Length: 211
Image 1 (cartoon, rainbow, N blue to C red):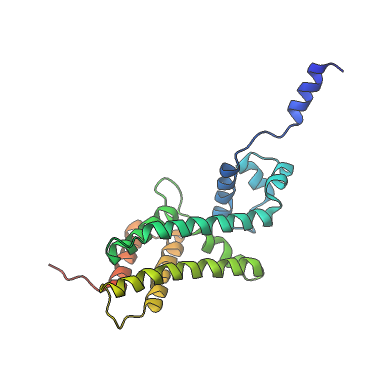
Image 2: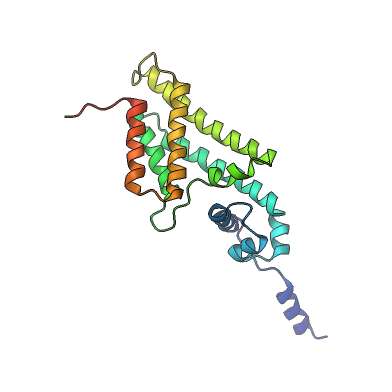
């Protein structure tokens, strides 16, 4: 067999190069839109451009890939919360930044509404999958903790009454965030979602005086 034929066969049999970050983002999009159960390996293969052996070699089976993406999304959420909940701006503005950043993910202007990856995919799977349930609970706790720390700081700075309960207010702030996630997925308009944001801000920070 000639060297040229051997090289040609080697090129055809070699898996094509891929960028892990791009592949993970593409796989996340598939799970995000369809959910875990409705997503097949063929769907993931088509989205990433990787055949099944390449997917297994890079990310493991479907469950391992989904687990990786859950942790990835939680990291994205943590970074987003940290960036939005700035301590050098008024509380109302910091909370608004969180909700507006969330809406940019949940209801992108150039794509279909998709809600929150964690809530949209993990809530259903958590019923029978203890690991997913733990991931979901930990992710929600992280959101509560970030809100509570910022609200406690606001109380210490005099933006909230001394009698206010940062933990209770954090639960309300989180509930508003989850409402945005669910309602954006269900087809609520951007105007309706922004109305939820303003109502939540008034409830947590106090109604602003009208001129």
